[in-house]
Amino acid sequence: MNQKKHEGVFIFSFGVCFDFVNLSSSKTMSSSPGNSNSEFETLSDVLQTSSPSNQTSRQVQAAGTAAALNLAEAKIVTHEDNLIQLQSLKIQLSEKRDELIKSRTSSNNELNDLRVRHHQLTQELSKTRKETNINNLLDSNTKQYIKNLEVKNLQNDDYILNNLNVLPSTDWDLRLSYIKRFVPYLEVDKIKTFNECDTEGGNTMLRIIEFQLILPLIFQTNFKLSVDCENDSLKGIEIDDLFKISMLSNSFYQVVIKNYIPNKKISTLMFGLNSFSKLLHKRMSIINKLVKHFQNNLYNSEKYQDLLDTSDNKKLFAILQTLDQIELIFQKNDRQFKIILNWEIVLGDPLTGTCNSRIKLYLIDILDNTTKNLSQVFQNLLLQHDIVTSLTTIIKTIF
Image (cartoon, rainbow, N blue to C red; front, side):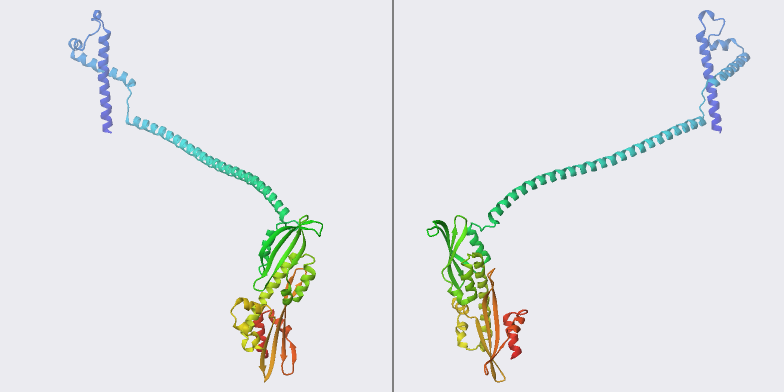
């Protein structure tokens, strides 16, 4: 509080002195050299011409008047004014800050909106590009598929025309190669083809195909096929020797000479020979096992001695291919019994040439020569077991 009073007195004194000096200066400047009697020219003149009492009263009067005049004009700055100014400035700055914050918030919101919009546009652009690429790929694949399909259809048409028509294939080398593939128990060898003119048949041009058909280690025979060149039809089948087939299976032999050869059924004939060869190999293998399994019970063992002693495959096959029956002897209660297993290969289906096995089993009492047919029992066992196991089961049951 005292500090404020001293500051006010100092400011007031300084203002009085300042006004007094200005007043003196203005009077000096306003007076001219010719009017020196009307006004004092300097402060020394006042001090020299005036008495002390008048001088003091005039000074106080002049100072008071000047101070009174200049107080209204002087701009006195107090601490409260500074606070008011600072508060006003603070308010202005706060308002400015609020405006800036609002502007920043608005800018951030706009920026976020732009980012969201940019993300959406980027996704839409990516989706559009993907759809465009997919459409392009689909169009390209569709065109390529149609092109490939057209080419494939043409190739299929050519294949169907050349291979899947109702007529036999004219490519005999291919047909013979297929024969080797689908008749694994036959071998086709020494294939020879040539042309021949049939003078007895009206000078018809024939394509002759000769080959050797082999049942490995069993028999072989020569085939001759005559093909009419005009219509690619099979005109005749000639086979050199079928005697071995007649010995092995008379029923199959009769169908071959009476049906397959006269009617030129080469496919049925080849399939029938393969089926016959397959069953013949199976019969030889099983009879060989039975002979060795029951070698101590063989009836008339000298008949099978060569089979038991030989190690040559050719001789073994030569013995086994004609062996369609095995005889065994057993004893029970001082009586001897003979078991006979007979295995024939017969034609099962003339339409396809499929061959079947006909197996029969008999039990003979040697003492009174009575016979019992065990074929049905044996066939029932064959439904669940192989031939060796089924025969062993029957023998153990009886004896």
